[in-house]
Image (cartoon, rainbow, N blue to C red):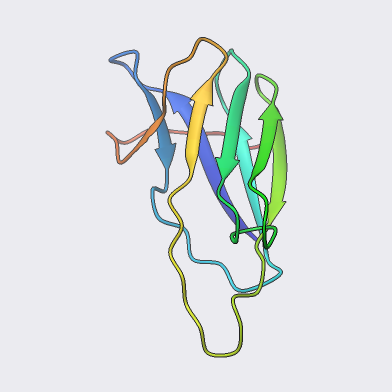
Length: 103
């Protein structure tokens, strides 16, 4: 399992860290919402389900998981995914250093 954190930085921008995550087929991506608003994570078709995109709503200070789908023996694919807030702001990768405390 790999972890991704979504947070609001000192410039009031929403960030995703790390920006790039490497998973094997059937591994889980756990997304932690370290913000005060609900976020929505959208992965395209093929990343988790073969023909359908997956959308997960994560409440403030909560977390959820998305399972990666096997891409086939010896295959590697990259998928861009979106993270947005309930206030319709998009979160972006790369950021200033931040301390996130996991309980």
